[in-house]
Every structure is written in structure tokens, then in C-alpha cells.
Image (cartoon, rainbow, N blue to C red; front, top):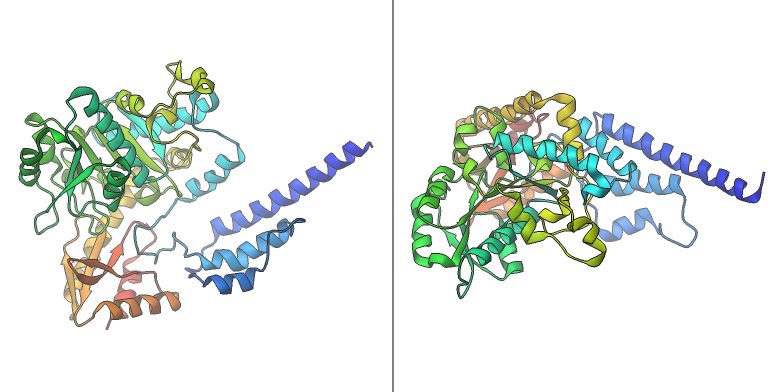
Length: 454
């Protein structure tokens, strides 16, 4: 055997060992029923426990994986734990999480049709299905991006580009949204150097058409877009989509619907009436890594007219001419990105495996659980709902508690590995909040957490 052959043999044996180690760990993790919630450690403690892992010679796959499994992973809170109830959890299906390994192992590039036609075809099938669920026309389409923040930014960039092409430039471009809109809208405005006109919602948290109309009257043609929220992160509130959409008959604006968390509720017949009007959106986002049981990171950005998205975002360079001079559907043309992995494929595989009906049942179960635990909170002395849940976010207060009490309670829950429930707030008052998207979260889980507030 030649020296080169020996080296190739050694490399292949090493590669096989690494792959076996990683796949074995992944299998154990995916199939585990006892994965702890875990909690963060301080930087000095992690440095002490992990030691130095990067040097000239490497520490080897076995040791590196051991450091990850026994030191690094336990210092990360497990987002798919049924008692992870903070922010908006992630609860990927086993099919979606497992297939994420396939996506990485297949060395796929999802930025262009030329390089990833099969992957793009599958992603587009999911996007068409979502568009149909939301009532968009058959020609609607878009792309999977990193998250709702990038999706909202890309949609607003397309909206302003369309305004620049179709109307005189004002002294300053403006976007109208609820004062309770997601923080990503203000972030997009800073990036785009535009002004946010924050309109106060009614006491129930809903942005209504009359308030939007007043802002449109006041700011006129400088308003190029209105952002309506389909399930706010803090409360799960759905704005008056139908009323706001009807304003398009009187005013010229791009309607963008931020449904990153809540729009998935449309899969349930129980919640669908709340979203009447979304079918008139010019663009929308929904995050499959939230309530559509896909792994991080995936946001579906959909345009009513994808050509407007393409005009705004296609990058031009000599080395890209082979892509941009063709009419192929290249995902990189529809958002503020170029390089991308086909992050929609895990959702495609999960939907193809289980069918949409299973998704409808899971979403409906979360809606039902939210109502059930809200009833329980109202029955318990000392607890008070801040708002009755519309979707699957339940916000409540404990009589007599201040911010320090909520923070101490939250820390105890995590230290005891009981639950991850971080304090939230509204109008200057601290509160507690359950975000329910994991189908494995039960009424018993939640009542045991409530018991600790007594």
C-alpha cells in the first residue's frame, strides 16, 4: 500500500469514528425522554470546567464531544423542554430535528436554483402551502430566512422600494404600527433610517383601523407601510387585520403582517376567524421554529407579489450574472441575504412525514391548554389574569409581588429544575407569563408551577 493510500485509509477511519460519535450522541439526544431543563453557568465556571479546547494539535473528537455533552450543553437551557415557558419556546418534531442532520450532512446550498433546485422546490412547496392556509393568491411566494427580525426587515425594504418606484419621495419615510408591535419593527426602522409611527392600541391590546386611519391622515403619503401583528409576542394579541386591510381601499400603503409567533394558529379551525383580513397582506412572516415545530432557525417570508421582493433584494455582481440573468427562482433574491442554508427543509420533511392534520391538532391543543390554565388562574386566590388569552400566551400577576419577588421565584424554578418562567412586564407592572407552544406541556405541568406561587 502506498503512503498516500495509507494516509487516505487513516483519514477515512478517523472520519468514520467522528461521524459515529456524533450520530450516536444525536440519536441518544433525539430519543431521550429525560433531557434535563439545565441552566446557564458563569463564564469563569465554564472556563474552569471546559478547560482549553482549541490548540495547535486538537483535543480529538471524543474529548471534544465529551466537553460538549457534559459541560457546554448542560449550561444551555433546553428549549424543547415542556416546562420551558419563557419567550416563545421551540418544540421541533422528532422528524424535523432529525432531518436537520440530513440537511447539514448533504452539503446543500439553498441560495440559488442552479445549486439547490431540489431543496428549493421542497421549500417552495411548503411556502405555497402556507400561502394557501393564509388565503394568499396562488402566485404568492417567498423564502425562508433566519428569523422574524430579518423577515420583517426584508419585507419593509421591499415595501419602501415599491413606494420609491411608485410615488414622490417625502421628507421622511414612515411606517405605522402598534405601540405593542414587536421590537424588530423599531430595529428595522433604525437600519433603514425611517420613522416609526407607534399607534396606541385599545385597552385589549388590539390595533384598530380607526387609529391607523388617523395616523394615515396625519402623515399622508410619507407612510409607505402599515405593520399589523397577528399574535403579539408578549400577549398573543391579533390586531384588527380585516379593518386595517379595508383601509387599503382609501389609502395607498403596503400591508405587512407580522405573524412570527401567532399566525400558525390559523391552522386550527378554532382560531382561524381571528385572522380574517390576512389574505389581503402584501407580505407576511411566520416562524416555523416557534409554533410549527421546526428547529432553529427558520422564518417564512411570503410576498403577495414575489416580483416586488425580487426587485428590492437581488444582488448584482459579475460573478452572479449566471444566476441573475436567468428567470430561475433563487431564494437569495427575496430577502436581505445571499448565502443561505435550505432551512425550510426540516419543516418540509416533518409535514411530509406526519401530514398537516397532526399540526392542526397540536396547535389546537395549545389553544385549549391556554384557556384551561387561564380558567385555573382565575379560580386561584391571589392570582389575576392581566388579559384573557386570545392564542396561547397566558399572562398573570401574583398579588403583593414586586419585580424582585418575580425574579426570585423565576430563579428558584430554574434552580430546582422545575420550570423556566422568566418575568415579563406591561405598562410598568411586572408579571408572569406562560408561552404555550410545546404539545408535550400539560395542565399538570402548569398547575404545579402555579402551586409554587402560594
